[in-house]
Image 1 (cartoon, one colour):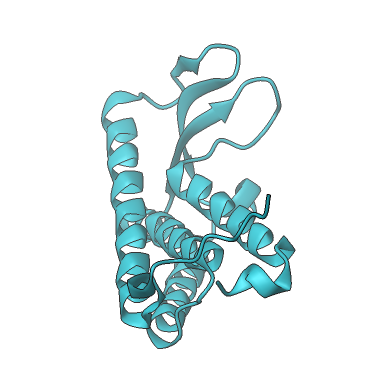
Image 2: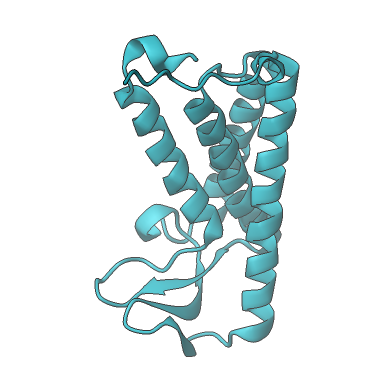
Length: 169
């Protein structure tokens, strides 16, 4: 039995449609991220721990003035500028030349949404709202924008590891 690769529908191959889908996914990512952070600010007192998935994940709100893994802590202005420049660069990339690969399309969308979600926090309050914490391992507390950024990296890796002939399907 031969398995043929699934090809995107013709209308999905149009650059203008891909741009619209990418910007829509990025917008949804920003909205979900900001709504979850608003919920955390309203419902989670700083330092209070609430189980989410017992033994695996808990809620604990913190303000992170740094970047990934709390690097560059106390540098909100430079990190805000980096967030703005990364977001602008991704937006220009999407508008000028959206990728043909479905994995890269999703990756760029999630990366833009995550960068803008955390960038909004940095510009609004000088710190990013983090509230998700793994229990079994010592891992930095994170938020949904961070999840989107990590999913984007996974999508880029999947795209890179796919056979070259299928990559731009």
